[in-house]
Length: 333
Image (cartoon, rainbow, N blue to C red; front, side, top):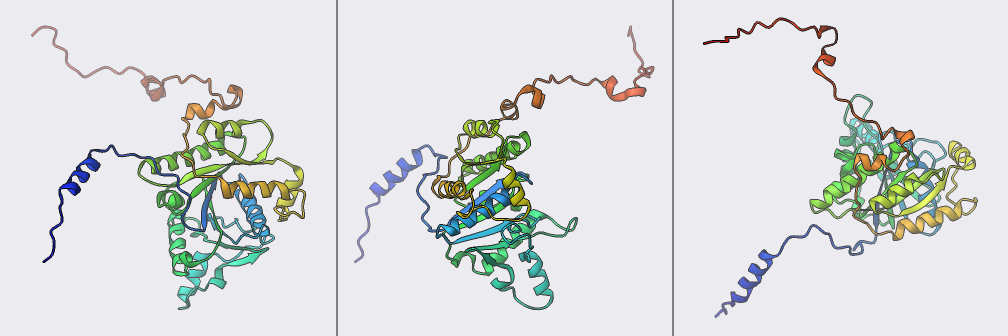
């Protein structure tokens, strides 16, 4: 005869658990999976591709297995790594293969240099589709190619940071990455984008997400300090400061890798590689627009400007003349 379990204690435990206040905090346990998937965000043109190409090359030089995936419709993430040569994108190759009745193979879209494996998701032609949807489609194709079975120490995702919606917000919204790194500089627009990324991370943390911001990489650092002040204000560390040096500018323009010990910049990128590997995902504290402006001098941003309300007469312009009313007024009824 099967023994009937005593459910009295179980019922009491359920009641105690139901009475507990829910917590939005996510336990900061180390990633259970060997592979660290890291999403890098930043304003367009701020130097994400430069930073990532050299960072990935340095990681490979340090003996790590690295996969670099460009998630920007511009498809320029791998250009520095491959000496300026554009590689076929996943979306472009998939379309061409589908029309030919063929399947996409990994060798059609993934290429390697200096121990780094790299590919570009790509995007639709200008005016003919949604870039964010293209990113989602690209990741669907990666899954078909066996993405979850690949063996890498690091997967670096280069995302356009000017928008953090739809496909561009995929790593944050769906916990695809363990952590986010932001690339910025000492200018208002790049820090505005960085703050938006922090806001997106905080929003999804409130919904139960687990992605955090590991830190800020300051690119083209001219020493004015606004980016460092931003990092301190939102409670994230500065992982590295890459100086605004003419040698770096020239080498980047000529598609030369500097993330190697064969150059004077090798030590800097080794420091960055170690910081990226060790930095934990943190919950940022995004700034308000006024808080962001407060990082800069008033003369630079115009933050002391006082808003002057417009009037109805202002809006009417030349039609602002008072017209006689057709309303009938009865003084005495």
